Length: 311
Image (cartoon, rainbow, N blue to C red; front, side, top):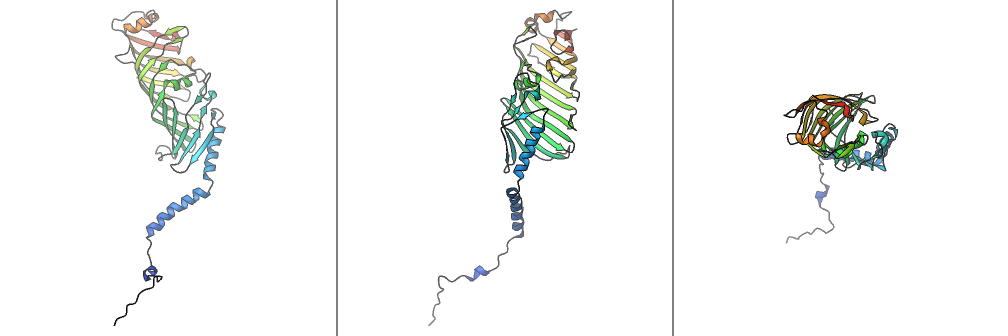
């Protein structure tokens, strides 16, 4: 008679003593996760980054930027400058500081143009949304702005309060700073909904005018001379009361934009509708063209009526 042997319930299975082979790849992956995580949690990296940002903002005496706080986030890494304000001293504004939404700074893909650390910076204010990509290298900073939107209300802060236009612009820009000196800047600015506002300039009443199209491709030199190749400044289209295609230079005065000097020539088409809006312009045209085509010359202070002539 065969006697059955029953294992006691508290008897351990011999299989638990078998050796389990942990994959080498799993060990490496775990180490790659835990080592940087431990470094982040134990090393005061957040405080160092925050101190560098605060130092950079406070030491920029020529362009003071105010803020309420600076936050640093590790996961989806970013730096947030809370409630930033660009002061009047920075933008030569007459009355108001420029208040922005929170500025978000993130690390970005490496740059092939300049060896250095690349970031993405998002600036927002009302209808303005700017995507900026600065690269910080040895002794130089490269700044690129791509596919950004800037509204005329924001532009007016940088033109000494000169607020003649209403519309939204698409902005692309590339510039370089070496040894704290601005180098040549390439600018492309376009709009499809531009209007001249009803305004009073030097006791000259300007009604609202639908320009619609606007396009400029230019370079800005270190001496603040804006250079536009012939035909690269286009204002208006076939549906506008005015169309012009210009080229030349504008010597920009940072302290008072309205006093900048313009030197441009090109072609201009003036419709009868436009001349009816500005009868004073008829007095400046020596011979009225039946087709409305004229040679336009602009030489002198930007807002002086004496600076503009027709041929």
